[in-house]
Amino acid sequence: MRSPLLALALAALPAAPASGASLLDYVGQCVPFARAASGIAIYGDAWTWWEQAAGRYRRGSTPRVGAVIVFERSAQLRLGHVAVVSRVVEARTVMLTHANWSRQNGARGHAEQDVTLHDVSPGNDWSRVRVWYRDTGGLGGTVYPVAGFIYGDAAPAAELTGAAPDDVGALIDAYVTAR
Figure (spheres, one colour):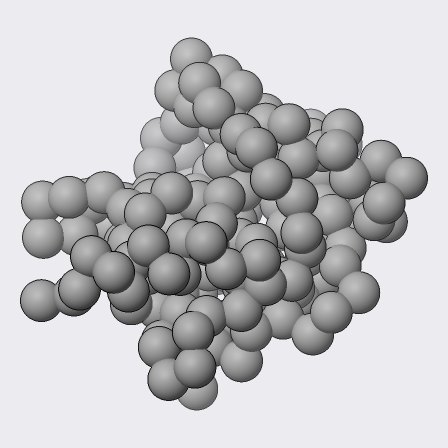
């Protein structure tokens, strides 16, 4: 069982996990996790990151490893969501590492490494996406609006991607089970 103090220490970190602590042991909100995993020092609700990044960080619509994707506020995500790109699989499919998305052991907040994110925007511009969801074992049915990607200057956390991410599984999730 994880110490509540470790969780608090990870949440308070501006850009990196505590020495010896695994980023993937994190349990909490997406914002402190994304900050620690990417090195992008933005605070506040996830949906505010896009505007806060203006003039401080480069922004765009192309996924890159270590970039933070900013999900806009919506009925399903009233505070938005932020996640870090851990791997680019192909032009419309990437993998994310993030926290507080799927339930694990009956609770939200846990970190998840290398989960599929698929661009379903009509213009192929990453403005609308579907995300892998543990409870369904595939891409969820909800399409989420996205503001874009924020590109940091620091190297992302070493644990951002696993040793053997499942690119083929990500493509199967994205295209074979596409709705």
